[in-house]
Every structure is written in structure tokens, then in C-alpha cells.
Amino acid sequence: MAHGGDIYRNRIKYDFSVNINPLGRPESVDMAVKGAFSQIQNYPDPEHESIKKAVAAYSDIPENDILLGNGASELIMALMGFFSGRRILLPAPSFLGYKVSAEACGCHMSYITLKEEKSFSMSEIISFLNEEGRAGDVLIFANPANPVGNILSEVETLVLLDTAAAKGVTTIIDECFMSLIDEPELSAKKYVRNGRNGLAVLDAFTKSFAIPGIRLGMLYTADREILDGVAKKLPEWNISCFAEAAGVAATKEKSFLKKSAEYIKNEREILAEGIRRIFSDKNHKIEIFDGIANFILIKCDLPLYDMLLKRGILIRNCEDYIGLGRGFFRIAVKNETDNNIFLTTLKEVINIYV
Image 1 (cartoon, rainbow, N blue to C red):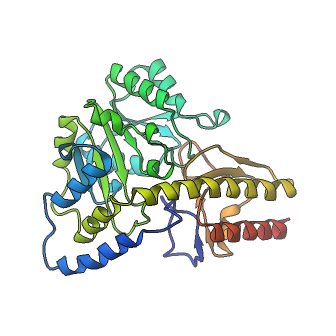
Image 2 (image 1 turned 120 degrees about the vertical axis):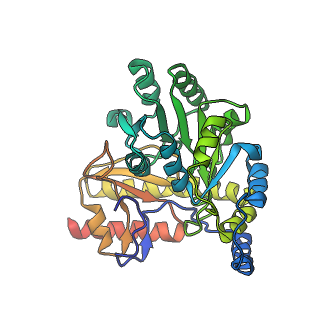
């Protein structure tokens, strides 16, 4: 499967393959969704007026610089549709949805190979742009990265944007995990606010508010050509009354996100150290890659996916990522109870394997 979360074809007790907020949803979001039932006899507002106003206030970006989608995935597909026929630069490894959408829309692809010996540092993207010149028309990547979880510094982001602009390359930055690290200075949204052309920033409430079943994504750009072109690729009524209600409520929950980011940071450190300790006790080779997102990328010499699946725990097998391969796995950071169950189960299956 190209993504995590395949709980429908596996007997799963704990899903560590998807990276959503371990604290779940604020009660206000649940209440808003329940309240939206009274609107299901009506078509949604095609102008998305209430949710656009709420997102504009939440992001501090003008309404006219915002497009809404049925999740970030719809917006990625619309972006690739707008850039159809052009060459897309993709870091390897990176989120598979970019490749899928680019192929579906007739784009051509070039890969920027991030080196394992450099922990898949995204600064390699800057080096590539400097060395290769204009090797593509559009660069798209996630920050924090998926599946590694590392991130560009504020300085690196600005250098990357300036380098790409000098080479005539449009930059699309996917920040769907940004709100869960509580470091707003690392976001590229400020450059959208400053009116920078050739830049679009993706975001979604899927991960941050644990609502993957309610699709709501955002595209921020001050570039009128991109915004108008992508808008023409979107269907009418793509935002349901439930997504709109949930989104409006979510925009008022910044304190919840701050609390979530602090929780994730602590649990990530505990989970990573627990995994490292279990492997060291058994003298098995493991590498845990540095990151700050709500998931951990590891490389080990055991068939962890199958071993844990037999115990009802689903993790993300990353061997299908371009630039990775056999032995790479991504593990979500969940709540304290679930993380402890994961560590206990991991220790048990490794003991049995040995």
C-alpha cells in the first residue's frame, strides 16, 4: 500500500503507520461536526466563505491567497494538473503522493537523491539547485520531511527559496506536519504574507487535529498565476459541510496545538530512546534518524513490519519509498499508553526472534 493506515485489510489493534495528533481532537471539533448534520440537506457554500475567513484569521494570510481542498491530496493533484507537462523535482525519499499525482497529470520527474550518510539532510536540495542549474520547473517537498522527520532551518528555507527563484524554479512546500512542532518561525507562510511569487505552501488539518476522515487542506500562495490556475482544477462543492464546520472550530484551537506539540516532543524522545535501548540489549543493528516530527524513521536488520503485524501493530514499511529500500520503517508517535504498549511488544517479538 502506498500509504500507512491500511487498517481495513489487516487485523489491527494499534496503528503506528499513520501520523496524526496523538491527543486526538478537541471537543469543539466533535461538537461542530455533530452540529453540521442539520446542513446535510443543503449544498455546501461553493465560495467557502465562513471557512475561508476562519482560515485567514488562523494563518494570518489574506482570504484571496487561500485555496481549500478535500485534503492536501486534492490540492497536490490540482497543482500537478496545473503544472502538467512540466518537470517536477522530487527529493528522494519523499511523500509518495507527489509522485502519484505528478504521474497522473502527465508531469515529468527528476529526483534529488538525499544521501543516507548525511541522514537525508534536506540541505542537499540547495546543493542540487546550485550544481544542476534549472533541472526542473517545479520543486515540491515536505517540511518537516516525510518519512524522515527532519526540517530545514529558517536560514536554509530562505536560501532555498532564493536559489530556486534565481533558477526559475517554482517551489511548493508541504507543511502538513509543521503545526505539531510549535516552531512557527520555521514556516514558509511568512513569505506568502510578504507576497513572494513562485511559492505555494500546503497545509491540512488532517494530522494536526486528527481528522483524516474529514478532508480539509489549504493552499497558500500570493502568486496569482498559481492560485487561479489551481482553482480551475478543483471541482465545485469540494468542501463538505462537515469539513467546513470542523475546520472553523479547529482554527480556534491554537492552544490545543501548542499543548500537542509539547506532548509529541516529549513522547518522541521517550519512544526513540526506548527503541534504541531494546535493540542495543539484543545487539541488533539499528539506526534512528534525527527528526522533530510526530514519527520516527528507523533502519534495522529485522523484518519488523511482519513481526509486529502478527501482534496487531501496524507500522509503515518504507521499502517502497524511492531512495530507501528494505529495512526502513516509520513509526508514529502516539500517546504514552500506546507508546508503552509498542515498546513492550517490540521487546517481546525481538526476544522471540532471537
